[in-house]
Image (cartoon, rainbow, N blue to C red; front, side):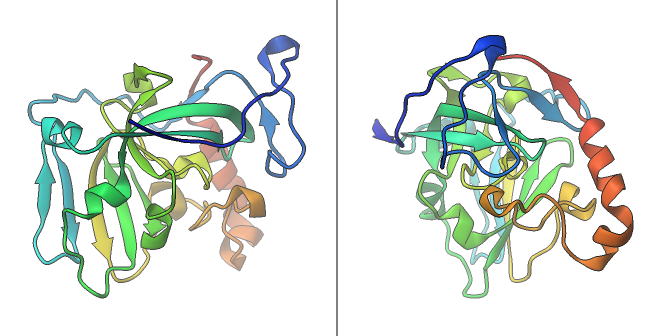
Length: 231
């Protein structure tokens, strides 16, 4: 199993918070040891026997993976920090799964495929430029810290895009739709940024519609999420 990583090691202070190391945490974030659970709606019930990962859209031919077929692909691990748009960050997460680049070797994209709409159980979606999915450390993860993900954290499969705000790391992934044009996903339609780079504080859209009117509605959407202090 391959292991890619970033530097580790940080002090611990009381209350379950870790020291925010200079240069390691994006603007406006605080560091926690806990892994809060945030999502819209209920945790879906998923049957692995019928579960499929579908690759479709701007492809020569759609491709499907069963769970066992996905697990038979080369596995990798990646250690990273994660940053939630709700302002918490968690250091040194070890995710295990299949690199998205590995999965994309099994599908022939059409020349105009430049964007991806990630589909998840429960009707949830998020959008990404294709180039973001090809970066180092982007996984379809089934495990965290040596243990299978819990359903609340996205079992059986979640996307991990560690260099963007963590809402882009969709839980309960079931499909990747390749597109010629960028389209907003669930939270992006509600005012979240189309990319979500934490180092540039891309939390919400910067177009006039959201800055002048609907930004508060977008912010309230965060607090409608289910929140749990599970580690």
